[in-house]
Image (cartoon, rainbow, N blue to C red; front, top):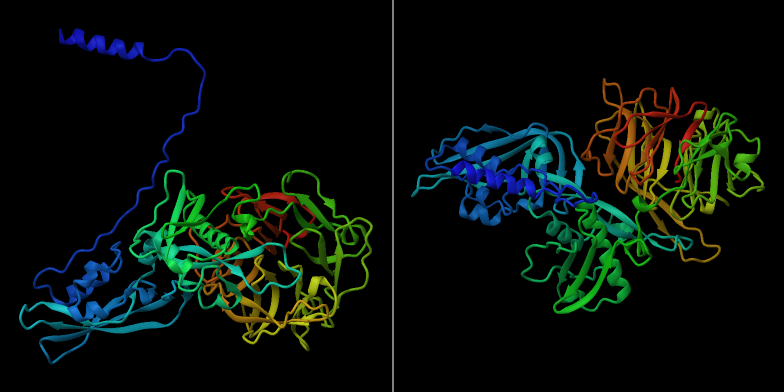
Length: 598
């Protein structure tokens, strides 16, 4: 009877299988990535001083939100005064511990040692660091309990590089460019400010708090936030989670209750850009203050979304890739049909016989600039058929081509940047709208000779390849403009401030390009190493993800801020391109100097 019953069940199962009908797609639940979580262990009774120190250091690398286990290794007073969020010190191999001799059986000091790699400050901003680390940690033994505890220690946390990479991740928060010129684009530029947050400790809420706290000190002079002074999360809010419609509601305190519609939309755009950089599942944000709904904003592409409020570089989609063809004219290739035959651009730089060495195309793809083949003269012209070339807008008097003009670069305002490498008069120059008398850009922190110039799409950051002695480095500077009143004859004073290295591990940078809102792609060489290609962040850190596929003999490189477009390089094999996850493919055999707009 049991066998018969089983047979009936099996037949019923077979009978329920469909044997007709059309095929239909079924939406499946995305598979969640397995997250390795680390939980700290509290100190054991009668633990030795070395065990207390090592246990405390291990607890710093755990996923404990408030470091409550780490605090158990401290005395009550030390726990109350210790502020782990003030800084994070990253060491190459993790902290070593060296005990010091003591004549008191109830007191002992350990020195934490290591080689510094980086620091993350209280604003969560990353900065590369060098040198040795040696900081004392003092322990005392309680006279009653006889238990050892740490009673004096440095503020912040310290950990090795591998633990830092596991615990922290880099995320962009977004602010609005404030140093816009009177002829700037219609939309305000959104500027990425990369910060490091703990990966498994509610990063969504952490990023919102970080955004509300304002931009990093380095970026602050050239950006603004639309959140009013004192705006923060509503009291009692400890966690933020999107609903089943992928909308995140952000309850703000009373300081944000009276913002107008324009400011509120800008606030929402800042939030949406920031959160989508962290988790793509958020496609709408709503701001509230108390019971009052302030505004909501989504990422739709029909003119009413966040991109209508502010413009991110990564959301811009160029139409063409440009390069110098075999006749040394400016040519272009459609990014939509990369297998199509390239054509000379309309206008003087593509139709006349002027031979070019390097080129740049404005971000609206309406104008172009080119340096003549001898590196001496810079020309600017519109990309309109039949236009004349006119006279050079700038001339260098350097003795050789390598002592003359670098490749030019257009910023978001339509201004043209170039460096003159004349040994007798080296200068960084800007031409408003690509014409007129060049403005000499002040760069007080510059030490060396500029070899390459690339202005970011946001118009407030600039990348410079600078040679000093036998080292060539990539430096990132902040563009500041003063004295602009919008008057017809007013000329601004332009500064590049606080230059800092984006490639501390490379000693010979040969090519670079912006490749995202806060990312660049670089070709360079480590000390004693071979040529390599990698991505770097503007703060000098290395972003997550694989490096581009290897390519030998790279002479020039270009990338679009939109990471959906391929990297393009000029190498021994001509102009080649690399689609994400693929291999290098030949595009043009007899061309050079490839560039996307910018």
